[in-house]
Length: 68
Image 1 (cartoon, helix red, strand yellow):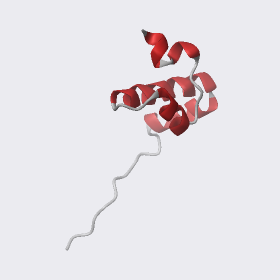
Image 2 (spheres, rainbow, N blue to C red; image 1 turned 45 degrees about the vertical axis):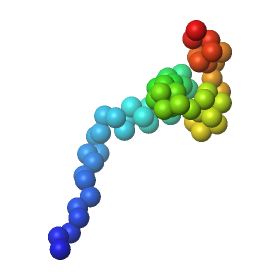
Image 3 (cartoon, rainbow, N blue to C red; image 1 turned 180 degrees about the vertical axis):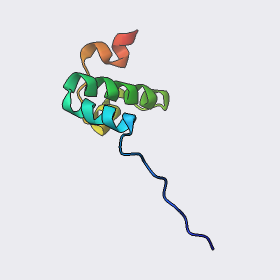
Image 4 (cartoon, helix red, strand yellow; image 1 turned 135 degrees about the vertical axis):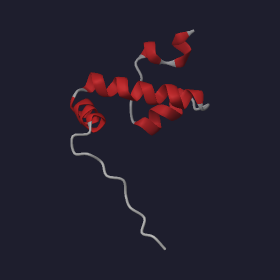
């Protein structure tokens, strides 16, 4: 049997750099979390469940009931 090789991730991975920068900037980090929230909503999760899972507190204007 052949050996399974792990994929190599370049050290200068732009996505990784963006995520690291987001962790240092609260506003950018919140926008990243909002993207995850939209995916979670599409999967049927409530805002309360997603807030708990993501560890964030949604701004009133970002709550699903505020979006009409």
